[in-house]
Length: 633
Image (cartoon, rainbow, N blue to C red; front, top):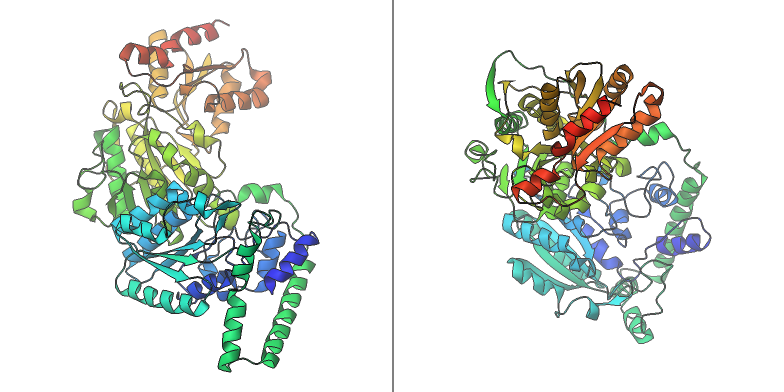
């Protein structure tokens, strides 16, 4: 009845879009009622029954679909693209596949908490072609995660029939390849759905494990209403119309004497009244008034973590040791913090940063992962939803491209969309100068500084690395933490032995001068320091340390003093962070400049392997010439 109401309102232009679940209602109803009310469920856009079964007030659902403030996303996302901790529902994103990985993370949190809970996650048969789905199924199987993976096989992915999507009889057969239990269930029989799923759920609580269930059903309306169903043969529609789950169940109850025609009319009258009352309440609510400060303020969760000052005892350690020490002390401070990554357990990671961690913290908290960056980042998000912090190690920053989608679409947008923190740090060993070639040498920070909702940290010294990593882990927002590989074992510094933290978004002035401002980060900081000394340049040297948020105040103050600016980055020039800093300086300090802002960057090529080619590639090769030209302008 809600669906029928929404279809009318859609035609009237009172809601913007509708994904109909008519013909599939039994699945959402049966699965949701098989779960406990505090067990997470992750639906798709056709699972209205999940939301009604969790007793979400209809006026809030209607407000969500109209973009009203009493909805769940403050008008920032539509239809079922929302989650709510109050009702233990985690909404989808349009990319579909990462939803399975998020369920993995929630289930891992349940295992770590030993709460004997499961979670259920939905996708359609079309979504099962995505790599994220296969990654997540594999992780769930390897880790024995109590996830109920629900595939609604409804015949079409938008207009593409199943015959053009997969080449097996049942999608449930794929579970065999993952060593996973599977079932095929009639998705149009609510009693079969409920009885079988309820039994499976009870069994999973007693013996945690993943289970894949394929529900055979059919989508009676378009992918969304604008799509229509012209591509569907009429005989197929007629065949499934005769199997309508609501009519089927209603007739069964009539035959059993549970319902009467009079009782059905009374129930429908009651529902109609409730729907109309709640629609009026949502419709009468004022539209959201845009407020730029509110919009900007909701991109990140505000942290109330107090900075912890360093102690006086220190030791001279390498950059790599500072990272390891910070991680270990964070694991001691946060008793449920989880580290995940390839080879991070017994092997200690390829750079040996987590060497010995397994013995101290156990394999539950220091977890080797399969080679599947996307599923693991999605799982980290799921852990955050379940209240657990995590640190994910990219074996090399280059490999983050395989996990790009969940970073920029799940982690980055989470707090803005539905006020859900994404308490995840992704460690990014990066950079050239070590002869590692195009796939192990990139410094790809600009991929992420462009995305609102992500914090990006890039230290150059052991002291900063230790304190900033501690802060990043304390932060409730997603942080990309870049660690230059060439600095790991080449840079040493006196570093406090105890736990301490440093503020994000605060640059460091390493030297002061009046002739020029040199702005750098990462390995480029050391290039700047070297050239300053060699040329006896009277320069302000600013180590940014953090690229997002960016310390513009320190930059502007220095520029207004010196009048000349050189920005150094290891990344190639076009589209890099130096370009934005240059624009900011020109827009805010133009009248103080005595010369155009100069950028120094690496060549517009991939990073080469051979030593002479790599030396030519790196920005350091051009730094002296550009600095002298700027000083002489």
